Image (tube, rainbow, N blue to C red; front, side, top):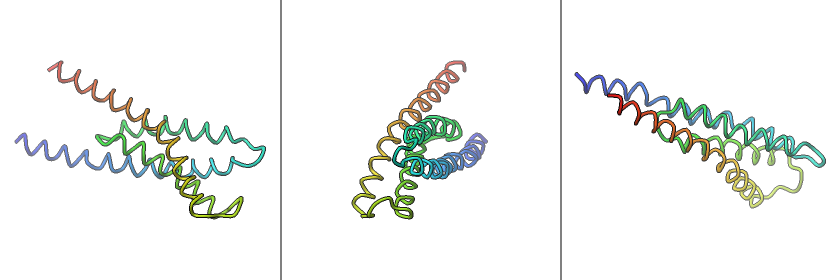
Length: 140
């Protein structure tokens, strides 16, 4: 009987991680468009980066609570959504002559910056969930 309950629990929680990864990328996309839109000469560039980095902390942390595993992928999917949106927005509405090497470099730089912050957030969330699980096991 315990294996049946355990199997039902695994099926019930398996969708949560996949949903968190998809939602993180979906939320990252408009953040990336906002980041590209604020990066104009004499524009509020820091506002765009502030929103992107705060989103990396808040969105990744919140969705890692939903996820049951693979917390790093949740953070990296947010970073990939932000980076992909900035590249796509740059190809749709170029501010200079578009080239593929510049787009790849832009993706790598934005992904690295946002990815580090989201990795910190997802790592902290994973640590907190691990501590909570350990404390619950000690109570039993």
